[in-house]
Length: 312
Image 1 (cartoon, rainbow, N blue to C red):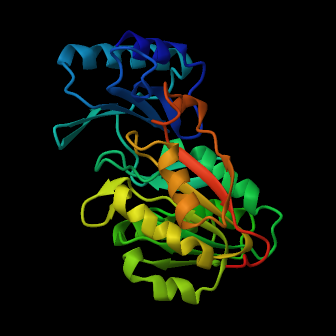
Image 2: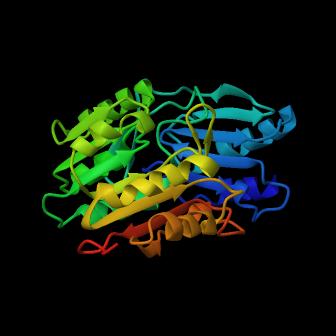
């Protein structure tokens, strides 16, 4: 646990944007693999993937109190503890309070989050560089049309529209998540340019295809969600669709957060199922999410369609 305490002590300021403070899951800190500490201003969220003792929580709480008194003596400490273990999730407010509504910022965008319920809190912090890539890619591309599959709370859509996208179609079977996504658009003053389909993607291809070919297709599915998506069998179904979904010269952003599936899982299938799409680059993960293995870490790969039809 010492590495986590050291990370708290090393904070030189309280961040203004939501971000990860300590990433034990990356395997760089022996005996700390089960710890993660995030800051969703003004709330710290401590996550443990095995039960923590009262003494451990007291030590972490004391470290947070000590550092925050140094960095922001006039601000109260707010922190939440979540334990995820053996298929169960327990969440506790340890000190202070959580704003309601709780809105955080990232790269100039605002997002609604919820740290007291569920395992997904409304904004995946490890995807910050993916969102930065989308913002930079869309900027300067007039009339860019984007398809955002597995949109969740539509953060990709927010940054694409802020960068000047003409239209974004957001598709996700989670009606609650899509509802928060609509709130996120309103939070950022984005009253037009987005549409929302709260449907199962695999039964919605007709509506998706009616939107025409897209300049950018974003695919960010869960790695395993029973009854919805299992990467090992369902990702291939998406890859086969990409050539028909993309305009000539269009781009696809393929994302996968499954430690057991390496980069080759995506690249080998793309060579087989969508060979006309060319691999461009892998988007780097945020420095805070450094991992002992690139294969275990979040994968965000960019592919490009040819500028003209490929002869069969």
